[in-house]
Length: 91
Image (tube, rainbow, N blue to C red):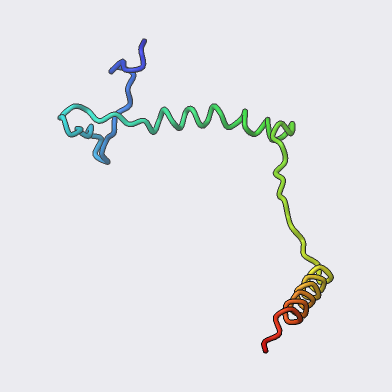
């Protein structure tokens, strides 16, 4: 059977069990059942992969700025200001 076999298709239905017509008047196909079946098939594989650690652990790069680093940067800027003011004396 091919993928578009009308005898195997799932159609959208209303609460009163009537098939919903599409814009062209043909029955409107509903992929929800097929997608749910695929999801149910793939879920055990995903869970197994997590259990046996097939997924790489998530890593994150974190920059840490210590108080000493900030103090050193402030001292460097203060020295630059002093040097700049020494060379730019206004007459």
